[in-house]
Length: 105
Image (cartoon, rainbow, N blue to C red; front, side):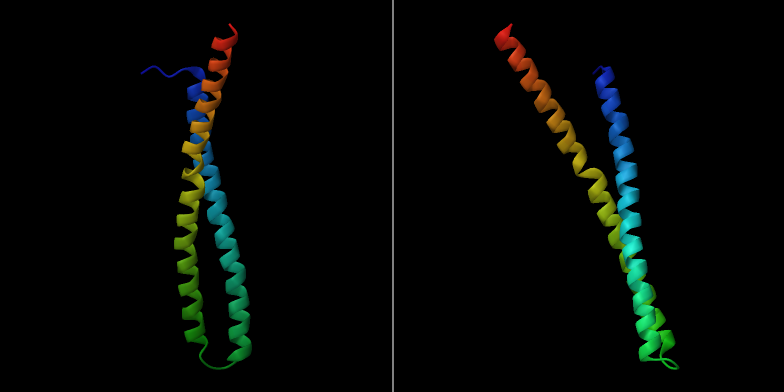
C-alpha cells in the first residue's frame, strides 16, 4: 500500500496529537491532584497539628498515586480516541468531495 503526501501529514499529525494531548491531559490531572493534595495537607495540619501526621501523609501519597494512574488513563483516552474519529471524518469528507465531483463532472 502506497502512502500519499496527505496520509503522511495525517500520520505525523496523529503522532503529534497522541503525544501532546496525552501529556497535556496527564499534566492537567496531576496539577488538579497536586492542588487537592495541598488542600488535604493543610486540612490535616489544622485537624491534627501535633499527631497523626504520618497517617495523613500516607493518605496524601496514596491519593497522588491514584491521581497518577487516573492521569495516565485519561491521557490515553484523550490521545487515542480522537485519532480514528479524525481519520474517519477526513475520509468521509474526501468521499463526499469525490462523489460531488463525479456527479457534476
